Length: 402
Ligand code: GDP
Ligand code: MN
Image 1: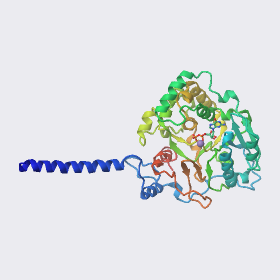
Image 2 (image 1 turned 30 degrees about the vertical axis):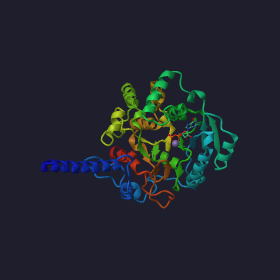
Image 3 (image 1 turned 60 degrees about the horizontal axis):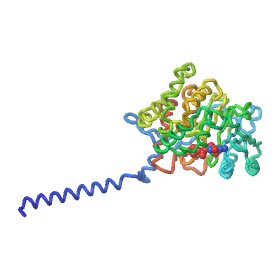
Image 4 (image 1 turned 180 degrees about the horizontal axis):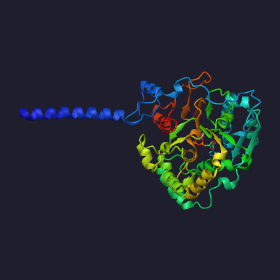
């Protein structure tokens, strides 16, 4: 073989080896993100979201000693102060008895054994005697067991079953959890616009939503309901996260139709910028047609039912309900509450209960505080790659700039 052909072959061989090594390294580093210990620690030091371009990552406020909120606090023994009209509220199935008992244990230990607010349990089926006995054993406060009326739970008559079947398939293809589980869609609708209409809550103003299998880690030594009332708050949350945009493609456009018909309901001090951010997860904003998908994670909420009963919110819910997205898409109560609050409420009335240590798998709110045990301060999730789902920085950027 002439020399230059040999050289050419050699060069081709070297090139092949280099390209192969490059490809193999690429393959090794793709797939499930590998998060090193160092990266995990870094994400604990800063909240997950980094504003592109300008500002540096925000320091994680949960890593500085977290105390009780400023403002008027009512403590055990402050008997001169009236109790709030309030209940611990749980929508739960009989099959979730163990999970709710475990959570009741946490809530009673950290808060309610001191303040004794009643529990109200809701179900679309009658609670079993065992459920009633075992839950009542967990608390000295009264427990009420309420059946949800069919007209609040069942799929409304204007929903077309054929469209549900076809659109359910699209949700499956988009990998949306619970896509075809009709009970999940009913649950989201009930939590969006029905719970506050239940006759058992007619004379109750405040609720704290409690889900089975959630955990509470920190001692709460003031009355959270009185805190809300005395400090002019309407809604309290612990976790702010992104939603799956494919589950709510038409929620924002439908909301905009409603707002166009009722501009008078929009609060001048609203949180619209938080709802419409497109900088941090632009893909979410595109798929959700203008909504950032950032929302209060509603498996925890402490709220004023009078807000949800207001014309603004309740008419908004009615509009959404007739548009059909609870069944044709998978609109969750979390984005629906969040959009309603973000548009119709004065944003200064929204409160982050950063002092309440909480877990609903897979996300935590874990403050640095001597009052807490069992969760690691600053931790948002055990699965490092999920840190990007945290959007609490967004809320601070646009709503609580301080
Ligand atoms: P996820 O957190 O979105 O995965 O949904 P969950 O399964 O935790 O449901 C949210 C809440 O609704 C929990 O408190 C459940 O116990 C409750 N729930 C969900 N589906 C039903 C249902 O069909 N009947 C009743 N009674 N409760 C339900
Ligand atoms: Mn849940």
